[in-house]
Image (tube, rainbow, N blue to C red; front, side):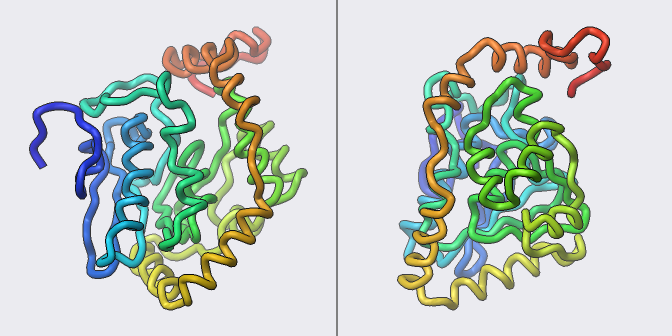
Length: 271
C-alpha cells in the first residue's frame, strides 16, 4: 500500500510498512517483516500488532489471528535506537500503553503465534500472552531486560506463574538463551515442530481452537488470566524512566557494556 508519510492504522493497514496483514479464509495473518533491523519492533509496530488484534475482534468474517515473523527472527523485542518511516508515535508518549500484551490477554478471538526463530524481549512476552505459541525447532528464547536497565515486572509476574521462581531467576538474572527443546521442557511453550511445518501446524492449532465454544472458552481464558494477575505498573514505569534504563539504551546503541558493569567484567559489544 502506497503511503505519503507515517500515519496511524486504518482498515487493514497496520500503521507501518513493517507489518503485513493478510486475509487467509477465516483467519488473518500478521507478519513482522523488518529484516534490516532484525524485526525489532518500533513503537508504531507494537501499536500495529495491538490494532490488528482489535481489527480481527471487530471483523465478523475473521475467526482468529496468526502472528509470525520472517527469516530466522520472530520478534527480538523493541527497537533500541533505529528509526524507520513509521514514526507517527513514540514510547515517550505511550510507553507500555503502546504494547499489545494486555490486549492479547483480553482478546475474545484466539491468537496463535508461529514462532519461527529468535524470540526475546517483547517478542517472548507476545508469545506468552497469546492463546498458544507453536514453535519452530530452530527458535530460541531470551529475557535480556535487566541488561537494558529495565525492571520488567510484567515478566517477573508472568514467568513466575508459568515456570516458577527458580527458573524465573535463571532467565531474568542471567539473560541466558533457551533452545526450543529447553523451552518445551520448562513449560514455556507447548508445541515444537519441524521448521518447514511451522505455519501449517500453527494454522491447524488455530483451526482447532476456533472450533471450541467461544463463550465457554472466554470464561476459561478469564479464569486463567486471573491466575496470572496484574504486574507492578508503577515500578515498571518508574524503571523505564530512570537512569539505569537510559544508560541501558545508550549502551545498546553504542554496542558496549553499561556503566554499571564493573570495569573488569565488561565485554566488547552488547550484552
